[in-house]
Image (tube, rainbow, N blue to C red; front, side, top):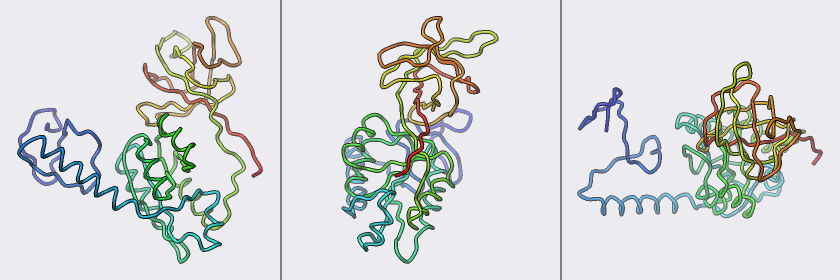
Length: 279
């Protein structure tokens, strides 16, 4: 346990900020700490707490998506809308939770059954599948395992960069007015393996296309450790020294972004387009 200057401290009183290392996951606001005699007892206590949280949260069985929400409300099949919130920081989790729960009305109660920090993972999808919840991500993305599990189990994952957009979309779905003209279509996933700074050009990412493809006209979402860092346009897409229109899975390429330059090795580029549809 260290203070704001990185110096070790043995105790911290009320309102004293400290940094704690060794935690497997980010604690939620209001979580309690217990001092125990040995690690075995600590692990048992952790498992008991996790089991209790799961039992408390598994309180519904009906699946729901924003697209079928109004239908279920109209037919009287749904009285509670369960939502799981994941965000990049704890403050955002609480802000999204508070804003969404205020949407409750006479027909439906909006309940945030779980909130956490970090990428949307398989545990979130399992909880959503069991409790019939929608997953709302704010400035975070689902990892590969979570994405596959959600597609398999029919779990609705909605990701946003602006809290107001999440509130507006869910409120519109509750009123039966959900009719977006555009939706996001993921083209591929690209891993940044090297970065190069070129004078008069900027930062170029040496990349490998791990899934799908990347095209010159698509948009790029930069994800680092499950957190959305930036969204940008492609300034250049090259194979060796040649400008190309697209690069497919299994091939290397160089990508330069229009505005964002703080690219790091290990970053993930999500290539996507916005497509119009009439459903």
